[in-house]
Length: 200
Length: 217
Picture (tube, rainbow over the protein chains, first blue to last red):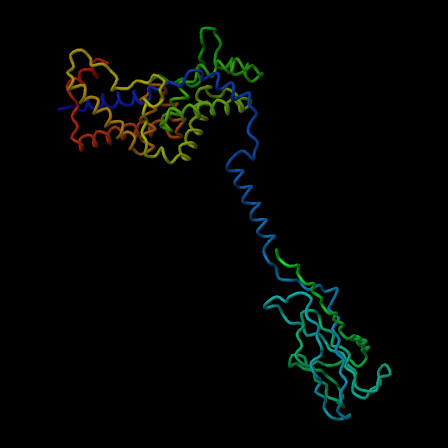
């Protein structure tokens, strides 16, 4: 049976044999050759190259991500409603919803709806030579949503209902008049299709 | 186990010490650095081999270590022996390589792989007085031991291989592993204990001729 020392000797021998490998011939030349070679540029190092590529990918993905449009406060959408009530003075006028132009840019979901003051002239008040009550404005920014505007004629303090909220009207505001757009009849020219040549 | 070579300058037949060669290399003398490579190539290679377990990888790691040492040579001030400094660089490189090589986790060192004349116990002719049966049993034991050494925990295996190679002092091993000398010695002892325990569990008995040849060595 093997003694403890015998096993120690066997272990020593195994370790020596494992470690008795010599470097391949020409080692010195290979090292000196490497020294003469220029060091690899940073982008040749795998980890750095991978990190750089990841940064580029994230950057590109960020650029391509759809963004919520931001309203431009300097150029609000000029939306004007002009109401020509048919009812006699004194009676309440339910003005139809002012023609709000569609938003030039899609509105972000969940963005707050701005309800700026609505200016109007009181019914019967001469404003700009117009006899009837004229609702000038309201001026809505691009993101405003107006479902209806109601002007109560004869009220001391006229107001308009915007989104169900009474908004006081400014009597000093200058009305904005939009000239009607002339609508020309569509001229459709007949389409003439020449007959195909006979097939051979 | 050789004595500590820390702060001992190695000289060759030309009389130039390591430190002289380092100074010349720092001044741009590539030939002087080549001489340093020649002097230290085996120690560097075997340190790398102990860590990565493959002769081809160890060769590559050794070259990298020398290149790194050359580029950092201006920072070497001779406070420690050049070899100690170089071995520390080598070990870091080797550990980095080992960490990036998952395949080596299950691989043992096979000297025959390198094809560079490494001894293979199976190629040894039977020693006089040893029966063929004893030779086979000894070869089997060596194979088993290699497998068991490869399966040791890394810290124990590193210490055992470095100490058992006869190439380094305990101080140098301590510097490489970043552990006190006492810890290195304990790891070597623990590695041996584990190997013996596993051999016993496998029912391996050292043949008589193995015992005899070991004593004569």
